[in-house]
Image 1 (cartoon, rainbow, N blue to C red):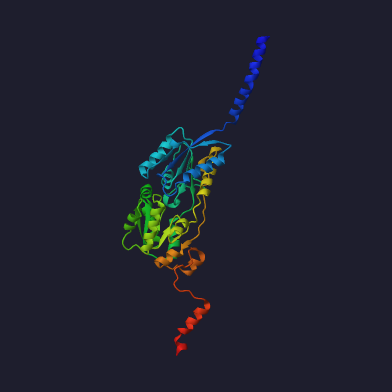
Image 2 (image 1 turned 180 degrees about the horizontal axis):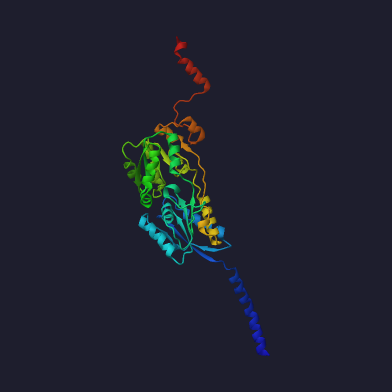
Length: 360
C-alpha cells in the first residue's frame, strides 16, 4: 500500500510537467530561416536591411518563428562574381528556407534564372523593360520566383527630361556593376536615344564623383543619373555640385529624393522604403502560408510626379516652359539672393522716373 501511494504521488507530480511540455509542443511556431543576398556592404542606405527584417518579423509573428541567421546574410562585394556566388550559396544552403535579394544587382542576377529550389523574392527592379524580366499575367510565371516592379522607365524619364530642357548629347551615369550585370543595357539605352533623336553615351561609375565628372564626354549638354548605390552621401553631393558648376541639366532616375539634393528634375516620387519593406513582408507571409511565389502579383505602382529644383534651374540658367511648370511640383521657388526689392508703389514711382516720354 505504501509503495502504491508513493507511485501515485510521483505520477501526480510528473503529470503537470508532461502536460506543460505537450502544450509547449502544440504552440511551438514553425521555424523559418531567411537568407539575404546584397550587392555589397551598405553605403547610401545602411539601415534598410534592418527595416526589411523588422517588417517581416512583425507581420509573421504569431504564425512563424522567422529568423535571419548572421551567416545567411551575404553580399557580393560589389562584383558580378561575388553577386553570383552569394545567390548560389543561399540557393544551395539546406538551412535557408527563403531568400530575399536586397539589391538591384542581386535582384537582376536572380531574375535572369529560371529554376529555383526554394522561394526567392527580388524586390529591387530598376527598370523591368530594360532588364527583360519574366512576366506572365501580372506575375513572374516562374515557380518559386517573385519580384517587385515599381514601373521605373528610362523611356518615360527621357520624355519628361526633354520637356524640361532640350538637349542633344546625353551622358548616362551608371554603376559599373549594373553595366556588367545587364550586358544589353547599352544597346537598349541607345535605342531610346535613336527614338528621341539624341546621342546617348553611357559613363561607368564606381565610387568617385571626381572620376565621374572627368569621364563626361566632350560636348555633353545633359546628364541622366541612375541609382549610384556605391556613392556615399558626401560623394553624391559633390557630384551634384560638379554638375551645377558645369551648367549641366540633370535628371534623376531615383526621383524626388535626389532632386531635393540638387539634381534638376525627376519623375519618381519620394522613395518609400517602409512601404516597400511591408510589401516584401506580405509576400513572405503569403509564401509561408503555402502560396507559390511565381503566382504573386509583381506590380508595385509608385505613381509619378515631375519635380523640378528651381534653385538648380536658376544656378545653371535653365528655365523650363511655363506649361511644364504648371504641371510639375517646383522646389525652392523663392529667390533668396535678391539685392533690390520693390513694393508696388516704389516700382510705379521708379518706372515713371525712368520713362523717357514723361521726361520729355
